Image (tube, rainbow, N blue to C red; front, top):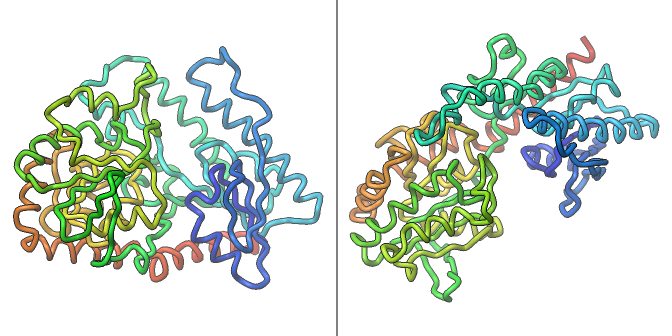
Length: 409
């Protein structure tokens, strides 16, 4: 089988599927991407670069759309070169978010295309308007409506769509839901698993194990969308009540979602300035971005893991934390509540309540044994519903078969 993947940040959500397909004899797997520095066995990479930046004075509603068109054009030209070289895929898969898949069907009109749909923007019920301090201005509605141009163009282009969770599926208009399939990328629960021998070395040279009181927080970047300010505001209370607690924070200082501060300051700097002397920095450890094995070790030594998010895309890290047997203290927001059930497989807290977050963490540290069942249930939830090999990879392969059957129908 010939398979074409497209994702600017290789391999993105296709890590497991592309690696599996690349290892199968007889498959020819090609991946169009912007990323140069990573490879997968059996996967041929074609690296592209946008031929120009977005126009300086383009209407701000249209910046994402123009960026998408530029990406789509370059990807289409790469696809044309593939076609001219004799490569015609049996199936194509690509993430919709950056426009890359918009023109693929113009190059390969009879090849089924599976689009990955992560988020449909809504004025109500999702991230916009969730923060009560966010200004309510009329401009937001038309801006969001226009931001969905790429979603709508791709929904009209693809043969099938994939979205990872029920809540994310629910954001898409009903008229398109019939082509969307809820298929998560999967968690390798053989790797993301409890490990009582795990150790984490801190920047100050100290080594932590599961025998220590360790509060953990992980996000790609330390920012409001992932509740970083609420978590930081909970720390003075936690540290005051638990004198032996150590806090380990993983994440970068960039902004993945929502606006940055705009003055060159990071949210980490902002929160450290706000909290000042109320925070014992001898016991708060920022590791930055870490290799995956270190990330897993952080989860494996955790006494209480805090995961907070706006009503937005659910992080893999939350499911990985549950798979490692963390006691998860999560925000009572829709993407989290799809997976986490209060006092069954974790603890739900108010996203904005630093006191509630702190009290839940302190209770967990006071009596770890009382939460053993929740930890076991957390892992079982992921194994039963999101395990890569028993659940998610088979579902992805079934979706691939459904798409290829469309071609022969």
